[in-house]
Image (tube, rainbow, N blue to C red; front, side, top):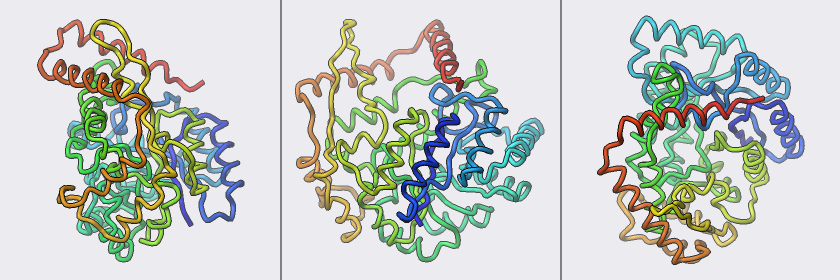
Length: 402
């Protein structure tokens, strides 16, 4: 059985729509088994910034979890921030954590996803009613990591996206792991990106409620800018990102993986449902980048003179990628060693990737390069910092679920 875990919008109609999908695909070998989410902010929060997350009350949360359970869909709560500023070592922090966990148990939450090893052991020991799942932000990509988190109390591990295409590892792990393994099927990160460690820290501080004003500390676009500048400058990076085509799920199933996570917190419900349908059907027609989140490069349309660039369309034709992932399953390349002796992704990018306007792409590259320099070289004024806080709080306030 292919078990999918998907982000929730916390709206009542969303659960009904997932139930409709499960009915439609009954007998297909796949179903949405679990939804995941968190409160918008908190002392022990998730790894996403508040401004992107649905804001729900405790009463809305309880009703949502209960509605999902009625449809046979479990709820997974995210404690997947990589750090909590050491609050878990204080009386205040442990008391707040215990109170939140008790609320989750009483609400019927089935599992929690955790990145901090200490919290894995705390939660599995003190609240055994809930399954503890190791987050992909635990960066498990070795047999030792599976063993370490399992011994700490984890009952499932979401693997580091860097091993998504490492079939030598996946086959061994799938055969020998004492607990189920899970992969994220639609990550947008650059392959082998070692900036993601700090990026996740920065993002998680954007929803820690004890920090500045209750909705976290804002941050600038450095990592987003850097990531997509790399992709526009080095087109093979679009294919190197460790995503999984819906048509190719069988490679991972054959390796012993039966749990698949769909990323997309902050997306509209219609987009999440489209993702679910594509992976349940194991078929997608169109631009594969539509499965990987919103087109991030459009954040850099504004020119220095106040004008705005037209939209840049980047198309990764999914049908043209038929056979692309076979290479990884058959050849098991050592991608950690670099690409100079390979060239597989770059060659396929020339067949499957295109832009609506090459000269426009260069203008985006110029904008993004200029913005990087500004972020690195200029110190923000006190007023700019305060304005960033206010704007952040306004964006978070707009996420209230009716």
